[in-house]
Image (tube, rainbow, N blue to C red):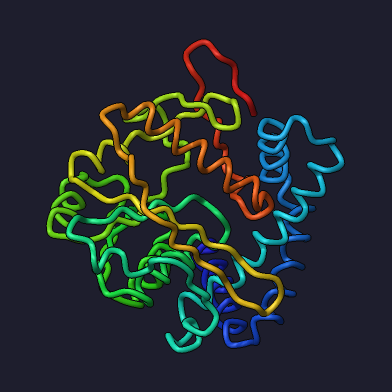
Length: 295
């Protein structure tokens, strides 16, 4: 009961602020991020450890400053989630600045996989797929243990257009059936889900359990793979979502090589905007047999 009440209070606060100017929400979010940096000790330590592993060449003070900046963006992503869940479509289309071939899936004769790394504006990229093009979209999501929050997240991700989402715990068959019917797949390829269907592939030089699914699914289903990067802009400027040119030579018949290439590409994008990548996730939690934990 107490947990449900706390969730409802949090959602009520997000609803109350979602109508405020974005610049005001951004200020609230940065303040929340500063508070989280001080209070969320376990997540702060995970972020600092990830930055140490990925940027060992940076001085400690620089990595700490980067972590503080990251928590500012993280706070914004929490506060501004209300915009995606409740704001009118017209407001969102004004705030989201789309670049590139957003309508590729509409024109392609083959199903499209949108390959989207975990930057802070990840859900803005999902909204863009529904707001700025007409092809039906599918994605996989991690069910929340809190049923109230789970229902709000599901409703928020589906409200803007023709879309379907599948729990990660379910069979892949319904998703594959959707893709074979031409539905685009919004794929998040860069989290640690354990060793199942994964391989240890270098990520910033550190072996990281990485799903082989992007390569295998693209090859099995004849998909076009289009990378997408979403970025939060300062203050009230909104968001930028870049639909980049599709990869010409992906997939190949070597899923491991494809996955290594994908990780290298994600590394390059992170180096362009390191503070907005999701550092509070244990990206290196799963270790090869015999290796000690990195956290």
